Amino acid sequence: MTVVASATDLRAALKERTGSAPKRTAFADFHIHTRFSRDSLLGEERFIRTAIERGLTHVAVTNHNNVEGALAVRAKVEDLGLGDQLTVILGEEVSTSDGEVVGLFLTRTIPRGLTAEATADAIHEQGGLVSIPHPFDPFRGSHIREEPLVALAEAGKIDAVEVFNSRVTLQRHNQQAAEFAARHGIPGIAASDSHSKGEIAMSFNALPAFADAAGLKAVLPDNEWHASRSSVLIHLTTRWAVWRNMFDAWRGKRTATGPILGPERPAQVEQEPVARPAPSELPAVDDPEMQERG
Image (cartoon, rainbow, N blue to C red):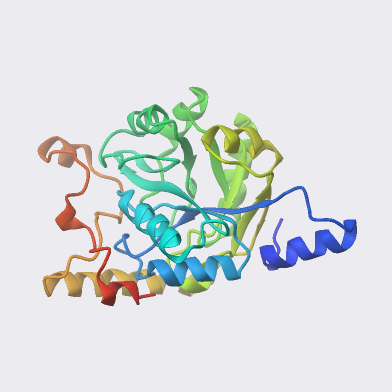
């Protein structure tokens, strides 16, 4: 289904129809990037205030190859005293040797460059959930390859599939994802895949309240997702962010971890140590210039 109404509008409409607040009290987006991704310039405070204004109650911050960006958002929520309005789920979009896999409810960074199966196992070992982002989008070389995707599904190692990603250019590729999820009995979610302020809450999920990974997994079958697609021009914002971050890195200002533009090649992984990003690879959380970005 596709709607453009915000979560706030949805709650108001449900209350008007029933005379009481809706039972579906969580309004969540499970795929969001901030300035800790090399293809985003979105600062923590601007993201938080926009998410709340647009009615989101739960956000999964899933920067490329690091959970530190999500930790920065959660810390800023606490600093602003907005913890009762916005719950931050620690997540990561991991560049595996088979393509991208998202981990939700993480406690530490999953190293990039592992296989999809090893990555899924690492996520579950942390008590997290495995979500597959934009699995059939041919315009993104980073999407997971079909063979490991099917293997994960048949092994029961996928907890959710993005059946609607706002950044997918052609709707038929979202439909492919929906058909795959239905065929394998995996719950579907919608994701804005936000990299900029304007994309926040373009897609969201309305579902019963949850407090942790087990709670979310239990209510995912009852999810109602609502979504609209971004303009194809939105990809220009990520290209600009990449170039801006490259320029800042050239100036000696580390702005975000990487790589982000595709899966790690197995040969490259064998040659280079697989490890979480070093502190020097990540933006400074207290950098005023960076806080104002986005």
